[in-house]
Image (tube, rainbow, N blue to C red; front, top):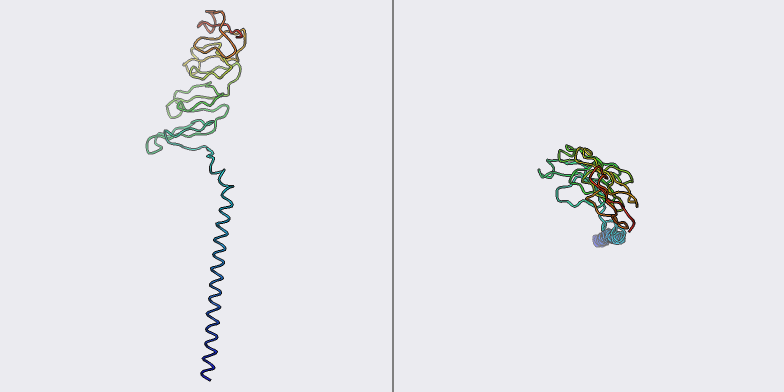
Length: 205
């Protein structure tokens, strides 16, 4: 009787051990499958995610001095105490009609049309607009290709001087202190043009 009981007990112990081993193996297999599946999923997702992470898309936000400003972005605010006292700048995408700090880049195709000497926390602010024919610009404004300055106002743009900008045309008189646009040459001079500063007739080259 004892021998039979021990035999049955031995069988049940072996069965129990085998059952537990099988369960453990199953768990290990499931974990391995899950890990392999996760790794495979990450590996298959990597080629799709790579183009997104490889290209750095700029976004509006605060930056420290010396940070490169991406093309098409301008600086619009200044926090004197930002970046551990060095000052910080807020950059955002440019748009037609936007106040920018004096330290801001001016994207191509934009001109300065207004000036505020106390703007941007006291370091000067400039109002940017897209260049257009027949527009008053500030003295420090860039001149986009294909445009010329044809008039001058000493008191304009907050008393720093302003210039009237037009598309270059044959027969116009252009003010001094600017390059002759491509496709034209300077013709006869007229001392009364450009508010007495003088001017040169634009002639097709």
